[in-house]
Image (tube, rainbow, N blue to C red; front, side, top):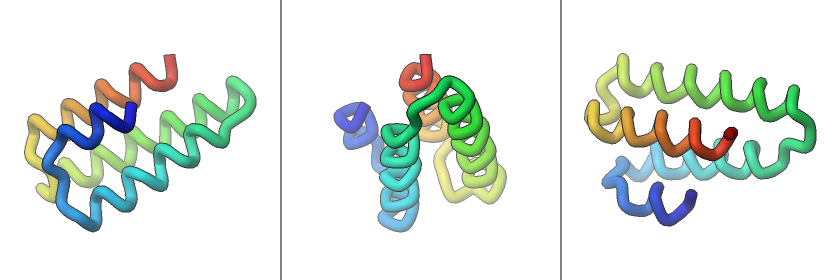
Length: 71
């Protein structure tokens, strides 16, 4: 997952926050935790997309990366 994230050209502040989301996802231990974390990630990415802090292609890539990670 990290390799795919590194390929995106995300703004520095967003990179740090995405790294925090990855660590939180890695720390989950139950299915309920994974589902809750996935919901937070989707909400966060949507917020970035809405505020135009992300290019649409990067937002779509993040949705796919995190969706793949929780599968």
